[in-house]
Amino acid sequence: MKLLLWHWGRRGGGPMYTYEMARALAKLPGMEVHLSLSRQSELWPSSRDIGLPCWPVDTYSGAFSALGASLLLPSLRGSFAAYLRRERFGWVCCTMTHLWNTFMLRKVRESGSRYLLVLHDALLHPGERNPLRARLLKNEARRADAVVTLSDHVRRQAVEAFGLEPGHIRVIPHGPFFYGAPKAAPRTLPQGRPFRLLFFGRILPYKGLGLLVEAMRLLREDFPDLELIVAGQGRLGPNQEALRQLGAKVINRWLEAGEVSRLIEKGDLLVAPYTSASQSGVLPLAYAHGLPVVATRVGGLQEQVIPGKTGLLSGPPDPMSLARAVAKIMTDPVLYARLSAGTRDYVANSVAWPSLARQLVAAMDQAPCR
Figure (cartoon, rainbow, N blue to C red):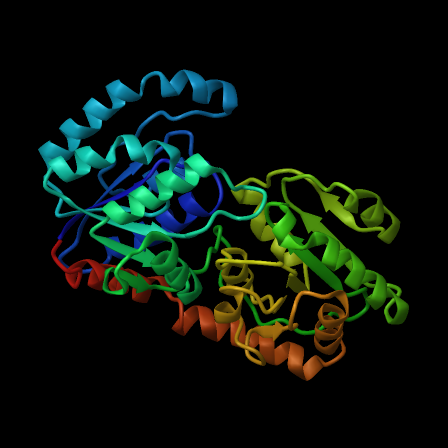
């Protein structure tokens, strides 16, 4: 199979997912893998060093440069079309949608390639919803020959919202992001210092930071030394003063790839207090570092947390339920050690990238003709 992995995004989960999937696919027998990536991607140097043939593009580095770069889309479209015709890929796999995809999809079809879309979200998150983006995403998903979702929750949403045939969708779980970290060592409850909770990722309303603040207040009644690290780009809003009063360490900016592993290592428990969720790349990132998770029982998070093995689900999103789940882990050394060991087993056996790569190839091999 001659395959193009295509993603023109710059930061976050898209470049990391593409990087890990490219490395795994390249090791499969019978695969010829090419890449098309943005030179502005934070992982461009690492992705280039994989050694696969690559057709790079210059996208943009910010809002101002995005406007200028968009004026060059007709020229880029022609160049991309010529590249696709020359290489004659059997499949083009978009590992995460990008705003420019809609301008390129016809050229993918005209080249004779089939198209697979890895659909991370079928419905845009609260705080990100935009009617134009929603229409473009629906159009892209409906034009794909095959769709992969990262949770069954998103699969069901795609069937309902986009009218997709269930047979065109395959669920392949989200893989772990290592960010260059060595193999995680088993963790035990910290001794001689306070326990640290970690909230990591883009700060948007649905991420439930306010819920975590309220849970922290409850926990401090019994654990006055409990610490909290909040790291990610976004508006803190009314939580800013509350976090200051709690003495939380706040890193309110985008963390570069090289910073992520060091941050994860500082935490003792990842807390994902989301009020809604498709799935999260942050959870398997924590697992890759041996870090247990407490998450709310919403959306695809319920598929990513294996209660009693990789973490605990706190129940509906409310502060008391969240606080109880956190307290249960941080006061039970045996449970904590078992969960940390469970995360390592989950990464090695349930979401190992070689297995995910084989499943992606199977999704293409088994895609029905349209």
